[in-house]
Image (cartoon, rainbow, N blue to C red):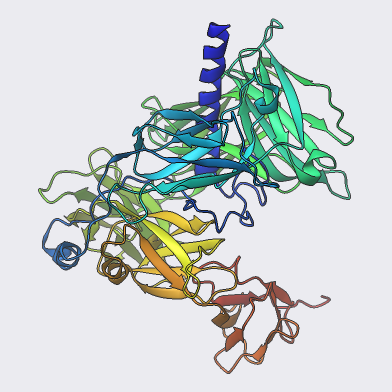
Length: 634
């Protein structure tokens, strides 16, 4: 019995790691999530708890960015006068677990906590629902999940906790050691899935995926939420179901094991029944991708993506890179039609190949990286402050009328940009959000230029700060907020900005501080707030986190433009029922104001197809609305 309990605990801990990975590292794959193990949903109601909830990836806490080199002196001087982030420390957490519906304490539930330290810290609640860990967690973001206990029927499936992560403050900071209150909800029903090896034995440690969705009018499955669990020593995975998904949803289940075995995809349509479902594993398909140049020599480091349609609206895939032999192996693939995509390292062009796989089939895909018929547009080398070559540095180039292409320097720091003949080429280095400072930053060069030397002049360290988005009047956390950090012009390259999701109002911001680093915060029901990141840090000296206060209301200056000509559209009307009504001026500009946030704004103009503009989905800067011209017969 003791050995069995140890295996169960190990499986539960591994399940927590998988849960944290998918919850924190794979956001945005689905539009809505409900229940434990599911991806965080924007409309999750976990504000107002005594715990400070965190949303977004973990990042190492450390001092603010320091710079090397004369060109980074301005940022260095600014950083020198700013308070550092909270220092690293080991902390304990304490609190209590209560039932969501009644507020009664939950006794005997086992919790797993995970911080930057690569270990799971477990704690079980007492008769009053209280728990306390030892000082074994790193300060900062701490994720928490229920560790299912197969020996206890009440807790055999994962309960839902809110919040799923919180901020553990450094001892001595304001609010450090405060009690954390976790709201727990038992599953409305449980889906048991038994995973079997090819010989019929239980598949312990199998990764099991559950997708919840619905059938459209044509009977095609559409994913709405996804959960992941790991099978226990008996090969069983248990999925907690809530709400309509427990009774009305269509379910899609599948499993893989050891990177070599995979199951078929099984769909379950309502009524679901209560009997366990079985997934039989079999050897998965294998796709071997080979990248070769014109001479037939292998090309290493080529970025690859293999994908297959998952449902009527979504595709899923895996990323990979070719090794020194120019090969990349994708294993445990299910039967289906796959698309292999590669980015040519010298032209930026996408190369696509399709392959059909039967069960357990092996296939090879050749990716020819040819330069035949093309000419060298630019060539150069990236070096550091001492003149030594820097591999893996992203540089960007753009020929007239074409899109920007991102390239990476090779092992010797060398890069080349090939394509059809071009009179001139724009070249940029160091413009990405987490890039260091390089010189030259932007050049316009004649096509065919070689011998370019790009020198790193400032090495910027990646730093992080916890950030709280609050209602300025009440001090309460603002849910469903997004924080965008950017360098320079917010309408510039997308690579120069990064957006962090603060579903429950708190998030870790990771950045490389520059003189022009700015922030912008959006949240439904609140006015956008923008400003200098350095000034924000200075304002919050000694607070232990960055606090950004928002005021209620909606105001947005937008431009309406023709998608084909990119010209301003004058006289377009923008309306949201009785909330707001506006018309664009000669420059295509309109100012939208409303007390409550509009769910969407209707944009209409003669000669154009009408569109609905969602201010939340538009993101940042999100101030340009594109209209599609009507064609004859439309």
